[in-house]
Length: 460
Image 1: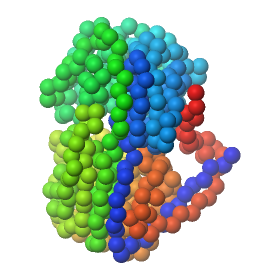
Image 2 (image 1 turned 180 degrees about the vertical axis):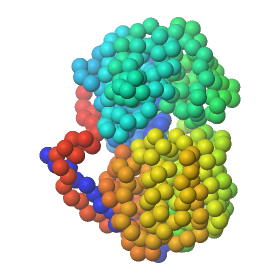
Image 3 (image 1 turned 60 degrees about the vertical axis):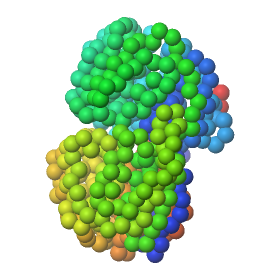
Image 4 (image 1 turned 60 degrees about the horizontal axis):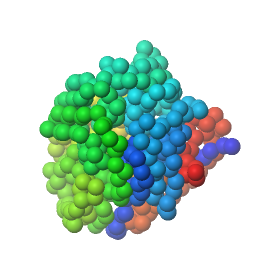
């Protein structure tokens, strides 16, 4: 059956106003599903992220014998198997477009006494996996990949592992979490040293669930489990990466007031807030509180006069996923916005340095592409034109926000890719009085098969 490509046209709107209730945080959703699958007992996870990436994790866990069922809209009931209760999947595990699924599950599966094969779509199969494979092999894991252990598909023959002391060459929460998952069943301690602290959702959840984990700045020490993890029911905070589009929209639109409800404000993830404040955004945080040791709050943002800034160093890991939308803010800000130290963007769902530079240039922005970032000469009016998502969900949503204040119409090709992380993005944009028009066309069967839907059957 043929799938459909969706072209979205965004028109400038006179007023942007309303409240957004965010989907659950992707990073926390992945981890809550995986860690609760290893616990003994049942856990209810509310506001689970609805995008295809997290549903890929659910699908893989179900294939490994975990009972996961739907309990109302956006809520999952997970019956953990314990660390030794997983079973060999009868087929290849498909991570679709989700690097988090592939990398975290690879760490987990390296300690399981059976064979696993993990693959993904064409984009994921082109992303680097050597940085994952090498530390797991040093723990004694038998894990192999295509291209001299560099790319998926990955073949994993699980077995006994040993704890290691490892220095992460790059700040990566995915690699860190994969090693921690392997370390739960290893013999001896696992000690990790990060060049810069990356998002710490895994550490917070593991501690709360009873793991013997200590973190001190950029170093983490994990002892193997002596008793099963305790199940943890929680309501997932709203995803700050999803909030970022509306934070920037409210700041750059000349007549806007937007409220984001229940947004996660984990300090390892709030780089986008710090960057916008440094640019002069009229942004405030209200009603701060905790959910399962994760901080969350409401955020109010209003029309602002932004100025260019430099983003580099320790800030980069705290907003790596938000750089495409930050580039949109930089395009409007007065002066130059310089982004450095973000070479990781070259190996995301697209080469985000190249694709962001290319598409913003189409809209009249002067962008200089750097090997590890970009220089954006701001203060110019966006020009509405036809742009492409490069099959990258974050680029699709960033271009939509640019279209809100462009001169003329902005037509976004392959806009359906936003569903990977934020299925309700277009509806939420409409709720703020934005003018958005959709047009669909059939795709070929081959293309449909390559980027097939990750809709999951939650029935037992």
